[in-house]
Image (cartoon, rainbow, N blue to C red; front, side, top):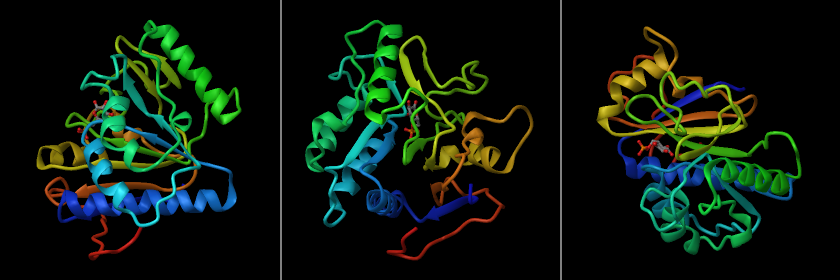
Length: 239
Ligand SMILES: O=C1O[C@H](COP(=O)(O)O)[C@@H](O)[C@H](O)[C@H]1O
């Protein structure tokens, strides 16, 4: 891994547009050398940010993208807790990605079958029996330091794909990662995640891709108490 970059933005608006540019530039890079660009999406605040900013990227071509979900709740797509459902309503129609290139769970299945079915979809799409390596994962961090439905002290932190009571998740050590922290109530936990603290490492602190890049994109309020090195790019800067 080439090192973690913590990038601080004046507000979520600037963070969002840089995130969209970052996704688009890494997609272009992947597509220059490979047949597709695989992107893992998370839920939470990321949905509205991406849905606003990604369609605004000029000349975005998503026809060779492959989209999966870093974590997903086992609820119908019409449920507001369904991450796929939210993206379907807010984003997918605006970026012209072929439907068959979006890997969603089958919410009609019981949880274990749903996890097995999703693992099968991933194997087929990535043409591998191994854990698939996405080109890029976008994660969020909750106010308790959880990411990807991995809550502090969760016994499943070592697993690759695991069913829990209501969530199917696809876990950390894959490829390029981008973690987003925003809003002020995350400031204390962000400091603990990035700069250490007492007790076992929080789930978001375990995020470390085997290769490639790791970005933490945060807004000024969330970064308020950081003392470690951060970047503050000027307007329009690209990562
Ligand atoms: O529970 C979850 O929360 C995280 C963080 O969400 P945010 O709204 O604080 O950004 C999210 O990334 C994850 O997908 C979701 O399951």
